[in-house]
Amino acid sequence: MLISYFKKIQNTPKAYRLANTIFFFVSGFGYSSWASRIPDIKNQLGLSEAAFGTVLFAFPVGLMFTMPFTGKLLNKYSSRYCMVLGAVLFNVMLALPGFASQVWQLVCILLIFGASRNIFNLSINAQSLEVQKLYKKSIITSFHAVWSLAGFTGAGIGYVMVTQHIAPSMHLLGISLAMMAVTVCFYPMAILTEPVPQAKKKFLTIPEKSMIKFALICFVAMACENTMYDWSGIYFQNVLHASPKLTTAAFVFFMTAVTLGRFLGDSAVMKYGTKKMLLYSGILITSGFLICFVLPYVYPTIVGYVLIGVGVSCVVPLVFSIASKSSNLSTGTALTSISTIGYLGFLLVPPMVGFISEYLSMKWSFLIMSLLGGLMIKMVTKIEEPN
Image 1 (cartoon, rainbow, N blue to C red):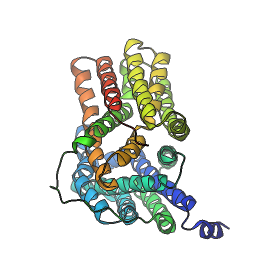
Image 2: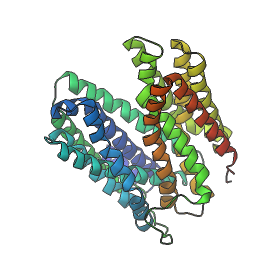
Image 3: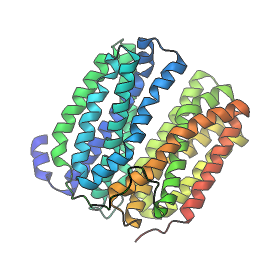
């Protein structure tokens, strides 16, 4: 029955949207499955927190150093071909961390794993922009909502695997094989577009002037989102002295707000427009961190977390969407240009929060995050929304 349905919708906008949705799920599900087994892999190698933190840094290094390479791929080949390349590499590398018996093996695996995730994620985002062009209504945030939902699912299954004492090697291998099968099944349904060749540039370049404001908005959103991933629980423990249950509940509230924000984002875009949505997002991020700073109590802080979650939820897909329309650059070049700066926020700001917390306090680091939200608001006001 499903096969006949897939044949019926082949080469239609519905098929392209379904395929892109599936690949967003593969990305989110695979990444959260890996994240759920990080503590077990650390123990398996007998590493300290500091040593393992250094090893984990190989993942973002692989991601960042392949960013220019991915941009060139997207300019030379269809995002569909790049997406399947990224998906296959991503799924292959997902299977390997549990089998690493030496530190150097895990470092090599994570370098390539990070590179594959970069190729995969930029490609599915490029695909989502191509699919969006086929629809009059906004559908762009729903793809990212599925990524979040897949993250919940992968984390849930990871929890079951841990409680049932399933080895990380067998768990991740099983997920890898399942996601590879999904990749093979849905790849033929993905949209095929011709790449737009760009003039040759240096391998490493800063974003063009027209892209700076979009890159800075992404920088703020990614910095704030990853700060919440890394520090929201510690804020509850160290500043609010909350119980483990409340600490977990607060993070669940944040993640739920992110997911719901993405599911409702397309309707909001249709009602308010992309620029207003980005402006409201900046206001919510700024307000959320300010509430955490001014009212350091459990329930106000949970409200702050929800505001931040809704605020960061739709920024990246909306920036990708509006930037691709506002620039003469190809989709691949625009995405790479913005993502290079955006990922720096994702990688560099959370460690800086730790340093600020060490010398001042975590409350003051959250105040500084609210100032970053103000920077985002200022950048959004400089955007001219295309028709």
